[in-house]
Image (cartoon, rainbow, N blue to C red; front, top):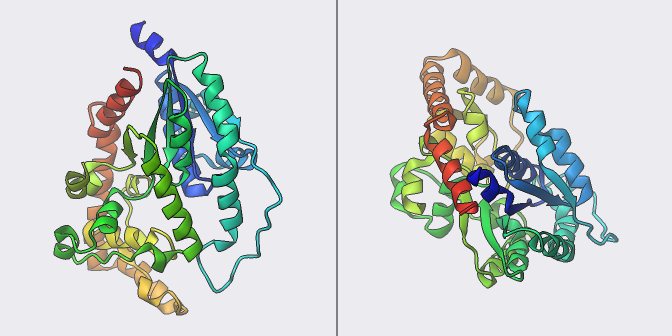
Amino acid sequence: MEDSAAAAAVAVVTVPFPTQGHLNQLLHLSMLLASRGLAVHYAAPEPHLREARARVHGWDAAGALRLVAVRFRALDIPGGYASPPPDPSSPFPGHMMPLLEAFCDGARTPLAALLRELSACHRRVVVLHDRMAAFAAVEAARIPNGEALGVHCLAASYNVGWVYPAHRLLVEHGLVFHPPDACTTKEFVALAKRMGQERRRAAVAGMVVNTCRALEGEFLDVLAPIPSMSHGKPVLAWPMHSDQPWDAELVCKYLGAGVLVRPWEERHDVTPAAAIREAIERAMASGDGAALRARAAAIGEAVRAAVAEGGSLRQDMDDLVAYLTR
């Protein structure tokens, strides 16, 4: 009863960045927290609420009940921005920049109103915000019973490359970290830097990282892409933009559980069908592929064990809930 009362006294507001890979991760986290009895409010523009609900997958029958337990709150942002057509010469979705900038500029006011509403009827309001939606941390600091935790949706090891591209872990494993300005656009880098300045303005209680020791243990020791790896199948990596080049390095070189179809350095070239066929055959029918599949299966088993009862990830979630409801 005491645990239930503590959970009910806390409101959790999750604020995702409005792109699919970010929306999905924050929704899964919201569902997990709601299943522990927490009042979870998932806040995003209405079109992205619909997108997140429509695309959520990977849950059993009980997952539908968890989704119902999450309260979806629309953040109305000003319209009037014009999105250009996609640039066929660039794999990065730069045409979304007007929307992303409108979100970071316009979602602040409706979010502040939501936080004030929840602050009046809860002992504590915790904002779990995507690090690319760091304005939410500033708004959390404005209410007397609010606090913010940033959610890092990229690989934990990405932070190592960001801070120190020549770190010994990268060098020892032959990993190459491509800087953000090589994998995105200058406009997106500018937005990321602006959100970084927002984070430094606010008092943030900490950071939640989506990973586990079975995947990135060495990197987590330095710092204190689970879904695909948990199936125990080898990955065919084809990096296109953003953090994908690093994910390919991590899966293929560090974890040894994938085949690189097209190196990042060849992103401007047309990949011939023969190269794609060769990568598939290597993963499925070669001697190297047998070792690859065995490694992927072992990693999948380790990840599933981490989320099972008594596993390290289950304990991490218990610790997070205990912290939120303290």
